[in-house]
Image 1 (cartoon, rainbow, N blue to C red):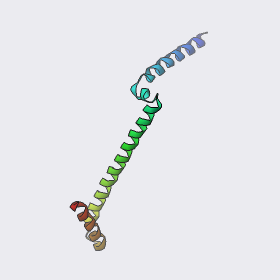
Image 2 (image 1 turned 90 degrees about the vertical axis):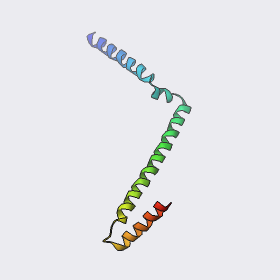
Image 3 (image 1 turned 180 degrees about the vertical axis):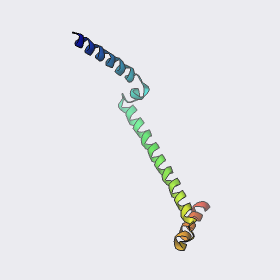
Length: 89
């Protein structure tokens, strides 16, 4: 009987935690199909925007570094031309 009481107590504690978890706003937004679709839309837009901005910054830094290379004349001139075009716009 002691083991059964512990099991019942553990199940009751687990049920209380699940109930507390279900009342959080994150899970409440996912209870409806519309809320889930809106959340995923916003998440996708933010992921796309972050990827675009991150790639833009990375390419800009790479071009700036390549533009400073003087010991490879062709590559350095090409990168400098691209840097000038980017800065002029």
